[in-house]
Image (cartoon, rainbow, N blue to C red; front, side, top):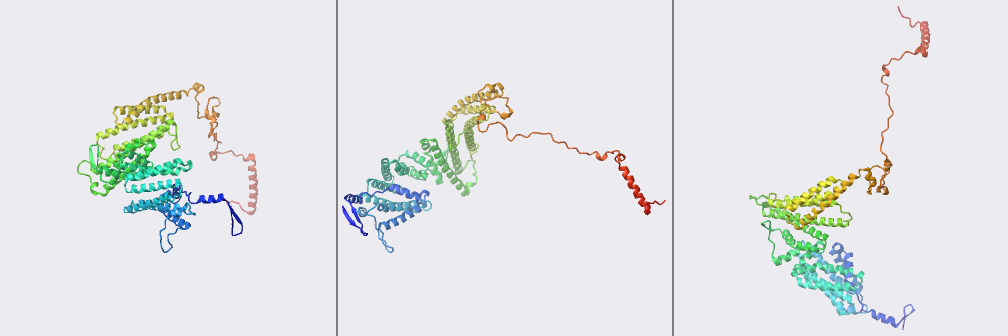
Length: 599
């Protein structure tokens, strides 16, 4: 035991065990969770919104603070003198984990600058060269970090493994940018292997960061495999693009395919070849070649819908490119002297045809999804699937077929119109079937039977016309069986509805009865009515209905002015009062000399 005396005079004791603990703390246990640290920093400083410039600024400020705290400055205010973190710093007695953060953040800063330049390179292609330079700088710092972890001997095994995976990932990103596919695939596979092993060895709560990084590597690995020559990777890439895992896929795949098989200059449709000029149209047609494989290999219906929606967006861009070319070229605006369509207009009709066909395919997948949810009684987006929803989807499909009939340049093509009309009848049959189900739910059984009869007519006509679509033929055959069973159900429901009008049936049938009259108006009739047990029983109508009441008569005496009433003055004494008044007045008038008449 060693006794020390401090400045205040208090004695401090250090045992032999404490000395051994301090010796164990020296730099043999440096540890740094690289991927967790950079993931947290990226999410908190801009990369959640794709702001690489903000993250780059954060890395610069963080490096400046670390150098100041760790006392590894690069010169003074006037002079720059480069000082890197070396193995000597890691083996010193005061070594700490933050020393490893300096080369890590330098690599992150260079990588963030490269990603920022990639965003700007869409409008300024020359910045791609600067992008490669920054990626090389990031790889240099990452390999410096790996050498420090391996050569110093002061880092634990987990830190060394993470440093190796980090350096391999940045090397793969650089080689991918340089289009060195095989070395890039090897580097990315090495990083993926280390991350998977780390994820398996760590506790459950620490695996998420490594699993997310492995998922980020998958699109790049499949793209490398595709460029090396693995054709099966094309479908995986399209599926990943549908899930939002990779961007600019069509451009990348088109560049790779053109380098191997040449540029697509022409397209053939319905016996005519046309030249493809716009770049967007060529890229779309190249991407369309692998669509069937990617849709077939999709895991579920929703994944197929996502893939088709992405293709439809690309088709829309291609159509816009052709319309812009027609608009800018005055020669293409003027109609040709011959009756045949121009090549650019024919190509436009072909793209519109592709868009409508893929839209119908997407809508059929939506119908399939809705039918499966209806059978299993599971809601979609929180709503229960109703027959009205399926009717609306078939209405949209019929509208798409109507647009196909009106395609420019094919209004008078008999063979084309016949094909469209045949498929149109098939989808009319499906629409009639679901309209019949809607009418059955509304208790309108006569109209429902009429719709089922029409549905059967459309189904038999469609099957007789020999449809080429095998999937549609099988679906029509299944519909034909459903029509017969649905007819019997509707007929049985209508019979039960008619029997309900009979009073005896109302009493004896175990069917719950519902009457619009309130209970107070039918107290003499006993019926089993489940509505009385609900929250809104039909007992009494409130407010009560208005009733007519007799009004008070009003008499208007209109004949009073035309009736001569008998004189009753002698009975009432009114005549005597008049005579007395006249005598006094005459006396006064005679006394004063008034009232004398001149004779």
